[in-house]
Length: 182
Image (tube, rainbow, N blue to C red; front, side):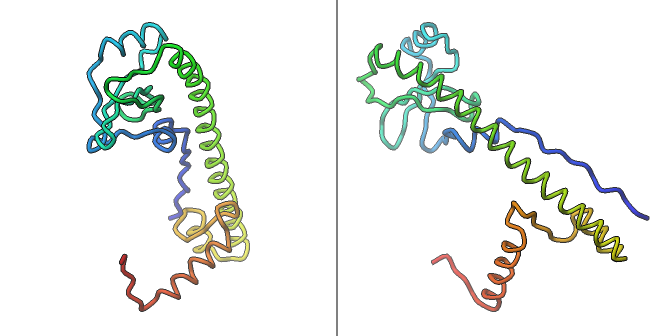
């Protein structure tokens, strides 16, 4: 019985992209602070409900941030000692620049995700073409394995044959060797 290959489409994931581009908060290093009068004023003044501060446990500084993904990933705007908040003039410049930076970062994240998807789509098309070629040669089992993803295949833009050869060479070099991390 022949099964049809699954059609799976990977879409743009802003959370995954934000993890790649922003600061992922780590409880061992960062403590999100309760909203102070300063932060509440910043939110009202700049109309940015996503502003917050955290205490950096390693540097002992306060860091003003804007959430990219609330509660998970942030964009750092400025770090300062506990008793030295930045001036309003500085914040006016920094937060306006942050808007432009955040927009640019979102565009960059989306372009990167689209490029990775294009590479996956191209590899999938190459895999299907290889499957058709194998079927044309009468290699039906191999064709089904290729079409379903059971056989190894690396698309041209993913590294193609040269990556596959390098992996094989590396595997051969390390065969029967003990490799430690130091």
